[in-house]
Image (cartoon, rainbow, N blue to C red):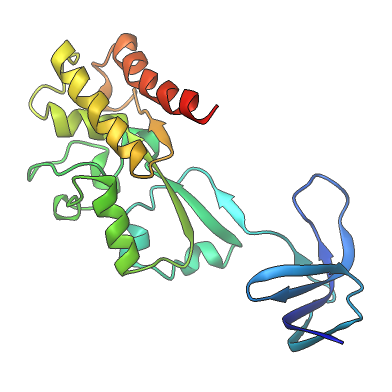
Length: 216
């Protein structure tokens, strides 16, 4: 008989494929699923009778502002208790990194935290902080357009970025992507980006194409 760490029996399994749910067993060893089905040939260190319960892959919360929450409350019970195992942060044009602003934060930045929380001038610095205090959930970080604006032109948010400033923001976005950011988010309804014309956004978005082309 083959051994495994954990055997979950009798669960209604919804696997995320879009197919019908199934009442099956799941064998897990060293944090990996090693068998699905009846799993009668497995001897488990721990067995969970999941009769009457639903078993599913962890959910992805695709629109969060958990940039700081994963650092301040790394257990994130509010997410795990709902089955969420991955969060996407940096939405609505505001991200905790890359940004080190002054003492005053325009709305909606206070949604993420107080000004003292914005201490990550690079995505790498933010990742290093996460490595020192790992979160219970996975996190993918978008780079906020408004964060790039506040970091690059803090006293001119009521204006369109000029050519030189756009170049600076492109470089910051490029570095953020190299360091693990998964993309660019915008929040053009909010004050820090209301003055940004379409061309400014397009020129920043063009940096994403560089990485798309590199992966193809």
